Image (cartoon, rainbow, N blue to C red; front, side):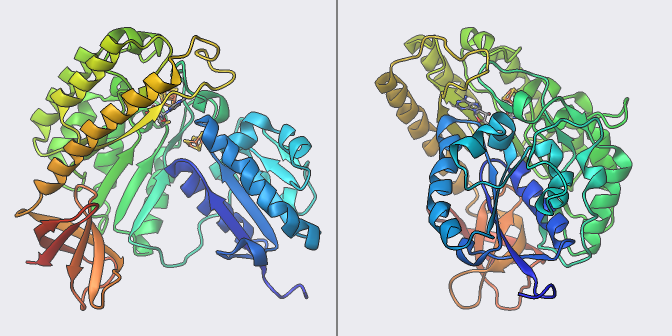
Amino acid sequence: MTDQTPKKLFIKTYGCQMNVYDSQRMAEAMAAEGYVQTDRADDADMVLLNTCHIREKAAEKLYSDLGRLKPLKGGRPDLKIGVAGCVAQAEGAEIIRRAPQVDLVVGPQSYHNLPAMVRGEAPAVNTEFPAEDKFDHLPQRRATRRAPAAFLTVQEGCDKFCAFCVVPYTRGAEVSRPTARIMAEARDLVARGVREITLLGQNVNGWHGDGAEGFGALIRQLAEIEGLDRIRYTTSHPNDMGDDLITAHRDIPQLMPYLHLPVQSGSDRILKAMNRKHTADQYLRLIDRIRTARPDIMLTSDFIVGFPGETDQDHAATLRLVEQVGFGTAFSFKYSPRPGTPAFGREMVADAVADARLQELQALLDRQQRVAQESMVGRTLGVLFEKPGRMPGQMVGKSDYLHSVFVQAPDVAPGDLLQVRIKASASNSLEGVLT
Ligand code: SAH
Ligand code: SF4
Ligand code: F3S
């Protein structure tokens, strides 16, 4: 291979949208080093696994994937294997001890060092929390055309320390990116064909810019960008849901009527043990205020069942809260004890009990999801088209409420935002016709 031949980079992304965004930024940093992305590990010159540490199963996936890569490396010793993301941060050099085929380990706040690490000019393990913003040092996004919907990280890290959660340890303290940088990145994305931006942060609504500004003010500024038709954000904490953000949902048409607001449990006792710092009633009152501002908003959430100490009554309180709110969709998980978090070592709920509770909660959430989806039939919604569907002439896009919508529309192009009348609800998507 000569120096002119581009090298190939395969990235596998686990975990949350923040990792999806980071993988893209790392690919751009490596592009400056002459790497192009490939979707096959077996012909790559470098494999980068961008990992998640949130639950035990997520973290274990890394080691099974590394096991599969070992023979590949045996046949091609010059293949570079890198581990990035939250497992890299949590386990550091331990990963190389356990899986010696790994060449480098880089934590989420050290991605700007990746090119130097690959060149062998920086240590092979880097899990520092540097004082400066990693984004300042990552190469600027390149001027290529982009898909119509994009992520933009505005806030990272978390100071909330929920008793079950690794994020404050893997991502570090809360940091808000400055307004000017966010606006510049958003304008650049729009210039490259992006019409919808999802603002990302572990506590995105805790964003406070350079000081006094609130997240609602940021959304108001973004809404002034000509050509940016849709704004979304995720994930939010109930305690950071300020008045300016709630009124933004009332006032800003570009802010989509969709809000992911994790509550985790409907029991005050468990919420307290989780260190969530709000009660079920406070959450319900917040939902009322949000729905007063934007009556058609679709709400989604995260739940954990089987948190240490959870009784049948606590579980019933969670089901009650779900009934009271009516969610459009929701994620629910069985509690997974994470080393280093405050709840680690507390007495566990019996596995069979936790499994049964998870099933019961998921059945209720599935019913609500079906009802919410079916309620779209007969309505006319905005759909941002993204790509062709499987049938000839079919296009698929996302509705205002984030449902996938299939439409027979051979003349529609990715990036078109059109009004669609919803005709039918399938298991995981909607069908409609252009109005
Ligand atoms: N920043 C987000 C959550 C990030 S983690 C927030 O505060 O809402 C995404 C979800 O994973 C959490 O909302 C929680 O429901 C789940 N989760 C986190 N730690 C977990 C654990 N130890 N066991 C099971 N689920 C967990
Ligand atoms: Fe984790 Fe809680 Fe922070 Fe969310 S708010 S990232 S659940 S510690
Ligand atoms: Fe996982 Fe890290 Fe995201 S632990 S959920 S990849 S912040």
